[in-house]
Image (cartoon, rainbow, N blue to C red):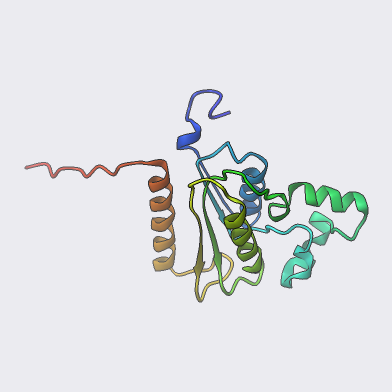
Length: 173
């Protein structure tokens, strides 16, 4: 909609989300790699076929279903699982995957696997990086860590969009 209506273009569209929003970003960038210039999936559930075998993931089975429920559910989950929909030879958006080493809700393995496979599959010049917050959980970080993460995300986004910073000149009194 934003591109179609002329609000922006591919070169100036970034998508970001955390947890289930990270899953949404991962699904969007694997289904429509041409849509956004930058993708910022954070602490996302990236492996929908095995999520329930990792720590707290078993508690989400009633929400998502599992690959073991039925052949139809296996195909349904596989159809949008970011990890399983990465394809070799695709020019994916510039991607900064973020996770936390002590996340007990969405274990960092989701982000590790996704970032590694994305680095292998991507054929374009867009970078694929992973940022791992240490001594942090699922969104539970200090104010200092929040500021540093936001700064890294903005810097990554603007650098990959080619945005040039403009410093304001001091106004004389």
